[in-house]
Image (tube, rainbow, N blue to C red; front, side, top):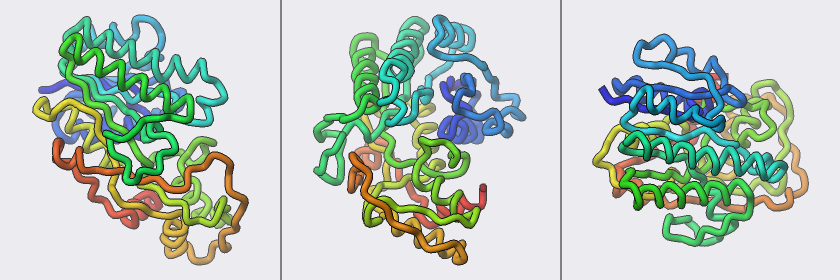
Length: 311
């Protein structure tokens, strides 16, 4: 039975990836210090004999290497990170430690113990403010944030380890992920979870700008399917891939779907544009479709309904 080690297993994306791998018959070793992840996200996983949990900070010396040495995983999925652009700007040193230093520790543990593959959670933030839409992996990477820069550095580090030491590496550039278990109370949550929580509680939501801002929203369970496939299928080719839908939705589209479910909620109000906000973001999913046979097939409306049902 294949064994997969996941850093950040208790997080929003990590817990869904854990569930997907367990459902596919894999063994999973999760590492999380629960600084941002939640133990309850792993409630289902912890009932499985195929899951084991290490509660620890992966940036502490020796933690990742000891886990890899003990469990000898076939692959490592590295999801643990400082998962916020604003947090990275507030504390660039912490951003570097959690988003670059941790990746180096994962890569080194893989090298020392012969792990066959690493799968890394990168971000569309590596593209910066590019207007060459849809964004393709071959396009320019000019990150404008500490977070985006750290993700790009981690991609380069893992690709160098792959070249130097023969460790297979897949880096996924996540677009706007949403779905159940995304914490709406976090100041760094995505707009989908924040708006959903406001509508459910009957409170007015504020749209900054005209609401025509568009994003490529991808449902978390689709994302987890791609990560699980890369971790457990050695035939999938190395490389850097967008994980996106190739379809854009505006904030007004999101509001309309929420309004259908909660028509009594007060009409949204509009505020001034927020400085630095990107107006439009859209990914090109062709590489993942062609090379990995991955398709994000959950319609935005269905994903929103699943999120609402989970709250």
